Image 1: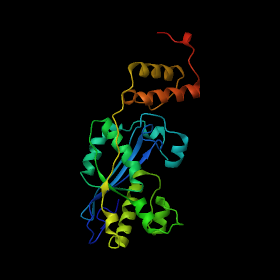
Image 2: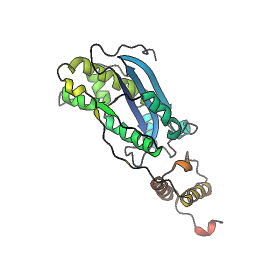
Image 3: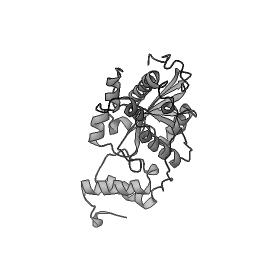
Image 4: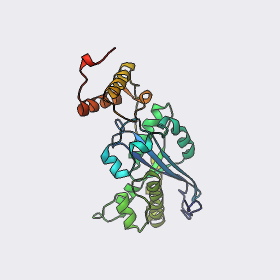
Length: 254
């Protein structure tokens, strides 16, 4: 982007952060997957890096999500998995606090992904949604688009991760310039708390059954069997049975 040398903050203590946004296959980090990561790194008030990466979620993307984000199964089919890009992304973030609009949503997905890859991801963060609730009129909508419009921040492409990360960075900057001296305690990064256990991998029988089901029905799905958890494999099997029906046992040759 042309804003690599964009001066974000002047005379503010919190000049170091990473603005992060994700696009995901759904809203539940226990069931859904990351399909795009976008981030903007700011150090000393200067943009020092931008990160954007499509991610193969290893499961189908619904028509509703594709319609909202513009991301399709075909777009992510050859993209790397979260396990292949997570280390690179964590290195990009360094140990900086995270800024995001409803930042806990993104943090939950990222921490679950990190734990499943054997990585640690303990961070502090600042939620621009919480700041908007503190400083915008009660009657105003406070989603990212509405907040940017209220503060006259020009947006790029909505519902794509990197563009939304830039918007969150711009929004945070505007809020900090306007209100940090008035309420400095609201601009101090606070620990992000989310406890999560590593998912159990899918069993060999689950993967074998899914492979056979997909082959039998001639289904084309961007599924990475080696990355499925037990619960994901079970949910995917239920979804496929609901959509295509069960296989008659006599049709299967062992």
